[in-house]
Image (tube, rainbow, N blue to C red; front, top):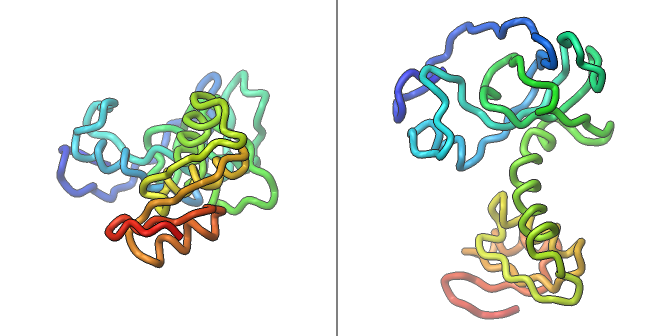
Length: 190
């Protein structure tokens, strides 16, 4: 839990309440860590939950209880969730914040999927709307948002130019499907 912005979090027992109408309790198996989480802890994010609160905006786990009216999920379902409070062993959240996980997706991958892929998907598929045959330049192409933009851009039919710092990061972007690579410190197109 966080008791003051910019201070270290406090590890303590804080069991979640039983789920109410439309809610589920989730046993958290993995949590994603995003830049937004850092901003929230510092008190610099646009959404400021009242103190004290448990940070963490995305996680994956197993539903252990369902509240009245929940019909989309049952106890034992594996889900990913987008909700404040994911840096916990268990969390009670609206069932609408959860998505079912496919059998082949592990918890660690699922816990880091919703925000990065969701952001890139909205930007490229819903906002840009016409990528087939176009060229997409992705800055910071080896970070969470950048790497997902490379992958989604390729799936949508764009020629992807990845820009990152260092050969290791460029190799990650290339493995994700980038067609061309630019070293940010010495801009040479490969």
